[in-house]
Amino acid sequence: MNISIERILALSDAFGPSGFEEDVVALLRTYFQDSQYELEEDRLRNLYVRKERKGALCVMLDAHTDEVGFMVQSLLPKGTMRLAPLGGWGSQFGSLRLAARNSRGDLIAGMVVSPPPHFEEARKGGDLSSVVFDVGASSIEEVKESYGLNLGSPLVPHVKSRFDEERGKFYGKAFDCRIGCAALVEILLALENKRTPFEIVGSFSSQEEVGHRGAIVAAQNVKPDIAITFEGAPADDTFPVDQVQCALGRGPMLRHMDRSMITHPRFQRFTLDIAQKEGICHQEAVRLGGGTNGAAIHLTKRGVPTIVIGIPVRYIHSGEGICALSDVEDAVKLALAVVENLTEDIVASF
Ligand SMILES: [Zn+2]
Image (cartoon, rainbow, N blue to C red; front, side, top):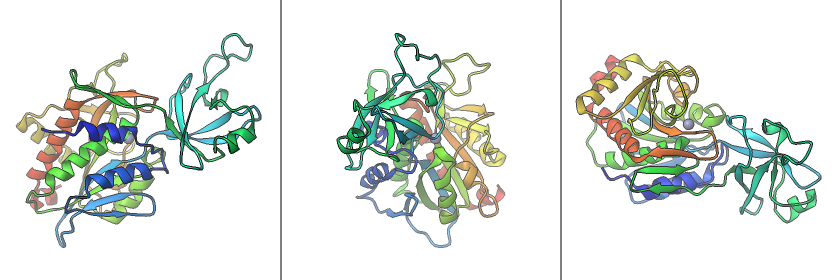
């Protein structure tokens, strides 16, 4: 299997916090420019990649384009800024390096700072209300005029991704869900000339991290009969937990449930059987937290059988994460095997 490393790195580096996904969408468009797919974008910046096939059952393949980030909430007199989160962050922000997009479209680097231990104000903790974002300015005027930043400026971690070829590991930001986007690009390109009884629609959805808002619109638009959603899933193999259910390098994670969806048991069984039969490395999980675009998709029409193929990523929703090439390969293999083995009768039996 020949997965494009370059695409994964470029997608990871692209600027795209929730609501500001246009760079990611523009990059994704370039991957399909020589294909036979039609590209369509809606007003929420959802990108649809499809080959229309009237009367056929529709398979929706989804991944979200946004990443967790921040928005400048207020400008402080000393030239620093308070931030509002876009999506769910943990509670520690010390020394997080961020890049803000200013009114001229430039990226301005800075960092989240808390008082050094030499000062009385130094507090333990460092949650978002006790830290500020600093680009090096000294007044509100300087922030606005020289840096071009103001209320509403969006930010993401200031990180350049890299690939360790020898060990097959990626390091970078936004693998939730750009690693899913990269897998979906591979799958759509692989399916382009395959014979299938279905209409295949790739949906690159916006604003998942703030409550799968893009997918709510996308699902109404696509009206799928069945759906697979790809995710960067939180790896749980480096912190003590009762049972490891999403380890790096052990293949895509198939969750039986999370807080947002009980995975369709018949479609899930079908997928697990295929993984078994084809010898595709995978892992199963039962999650008490978390949620995916499946939440929105499975509740449309008369109910849409939906599964989630999660690619393990260590430390999602923080400044930088780690994921493995072999897990991307297995996720792509599994999704292709599922689509190739589905028939109209099987979908009807779900
Ligand atoms: Zn995600």
